[in-house]
Length: 354
Image 1 (tube, one colour):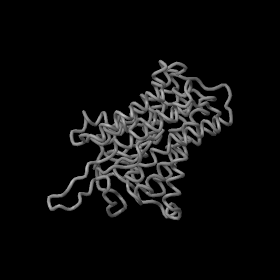
Image 2: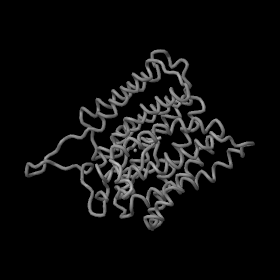
Image 3: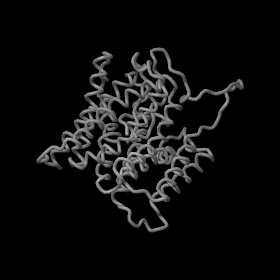
Image 4: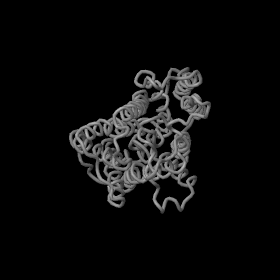
């Protein structure tokens, strides 16, 4: 559930949000062990699906999306001012950011909000976990340098078997809202398309991670500011709980979580940070059952485990050796350079963010 996107594999669902590297963690963030921040990040993104569900009880889906983007932009804008960072320059960069904002924020956020009108937040969280599967499938076509190994290909097949298990395919999908589920899967697919787009167009721009991410979320806010009034009307009354859910979804899930992720990626690297992806559906499911009283059938958790196992396999990398026989250091495992940034084009935060 996160906002901006990494240019390379996990991670990021979603949801989750760096573009070209990682910013230095703040002094305050360093006071907490990275494992604590990792856990907080997983909790925030896992609960994001619950926040969406509660938000749609008082607002139209587009309004929920606009609210989360608005509050997320506010948090990132404050961070930009505090760090005295500057916005990107150049029409080309802003053009690519506009497309990225649509694919990674405006579209998937709206799709998840509409999906949760008819499906449980638990199912939405599990659908979000399919993002790495879509990403690998698309990379076969879009990224010639990212060819699959047998293990990754097996992971793809296993992952989609898990999806069929979650959906109860042997029962003919009875009792399942097909439209809502399709919207959630389409949102995850949009994340995958957006990450590949960002990887091909915004890697190595020389602009800070925070500046790119903040600009992207800001552009998505403008996009929803145009669309929302065309398809919705102001609610007759504003209920406190849905409003608080939207504020939390934006300020925490779309703003603060991104800042937390920067610190974790810079400290332990994108590969370790990407593991947060596999905790999100677990937390989303637990939150939906415990807080919202959503019902689970046996195939939902079993299918979720299969999906996560397949997603994990798709993220494995074939070991390569340098001409001298030394161990090859992949771009994803490269340590941060001076100034706390990863080398240009190196991956970023987790992919699957609500």
